[in-house]
Length: 603
Image (cartoon, rainbow, N blue to C red):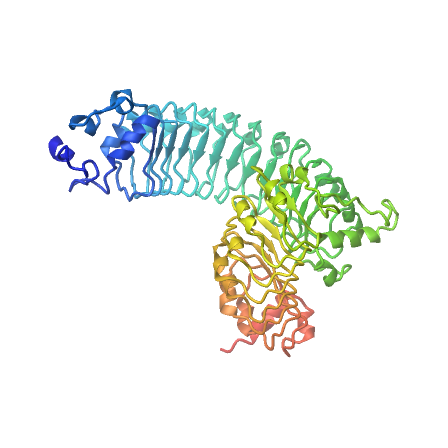
């Protein structure tokens, strides 16, 4: 049998053929040879339904080529092999892992994500050197207790499985720094989590948690906690004592009030959008001196306290879709604020055209309204190089500390290479090239595709969108208002994370079809164009769409079926030539307009 498996010494295909009874494609001998030298074996995407036995026994059996009449040089001496330390089996069709995994005790990395695993073998406990285990995107229903014996494990990725509970001994993973349990079916978290004192990142998003154990506050190293889309109605007060916390995500829960964080002096990002929060008070704000991002969209806030000015480091404030009717003028004195999102609020003290001029103009307007002259109106708050730079020097601090690449208001026809060169190995999340004279999107923007999520190219001379923009796969916010655009490329459907797009003041005559195929869109701003019609059936497929601004276009009629888009919280239609709904209906707000449209649907 061994001879049959080996083939003849002269057969160049030896080791590459599959036996009739062998599951899936065989593993090329060349890969196994290389793995014995460097200790790494990558078998991802090979359509394997089982792991061949010779993989588990790679460091035990005599290699196949040693039985052949081959002369080994010094570099090919198999008996000097390296123990396998990294095994990647991702994106195959594996339904189980053999207990033979214990034969690879030197493994430090085991990656089996994107398979069809329903369980993990108990032999996993023998991999005492394992530091990273990725079993995400499988069908796991439980975790063996033996996994908790892995004292050196630093990264454990279990997201996108079918886990409904975790072993009580989870707290024994004392070296764990990263734990991702998102997109499972967890209703509770073991109190033993308190022992995970080395944990830096914990992701519990998209589960069924109704509360968090108070013991979670014992995680003294935790910097990032994500509890997005659970069923949390409250947050334990102990959470406020987590001094290392830098990023906290509580979006899409059932919170009715914002926790107070007296000890979270390092908290930089607080995301509490899509809850039921009605009040933001001074008590909430006075401890958050380090806050850079405050996301409160889709809540029930009616006002903003003057104490918002305590957040002197605030860069991004999202108040979209609340019930705010006026803003404190003191907001204009926030020196670092680069994005103020206010769409979907019944603001009465600020004209809509002022809102469309962008954050800096709005802040300038608010400063001009301050009556007590705390800041001289002639000087205003200092406009720094990281917001509206007045000189062409490169702001390295903005790139390294704020992750912002800014080159706006320069009247530039091209973005100089030195601007992109300055990024180096830094991770940039925000790009602002607005208010220039760009005729095309800078080709080098593609260099930022692994990190950039917010791009502002507004107020330029763009006539088309190049494919470079379409590969920015992490993009969530895109502002290309005030250009000369008439269409969007179909390739934009690759922007699978895009949430907000601003296309106001362009030259669109038809609603861009590609937008119908981006289901993540939450806000579409398309006012002041020449759009003549919309397809309500297609719009309804964008089921996360909450804001649709079609003001000042050429709509001759509003299709009644648009009334079935019940997720729309803000629908703006003023300034179009249609006769119905009449202005009196429009003035009653979105809910009334949708109800009117539904009543007009033919039965």
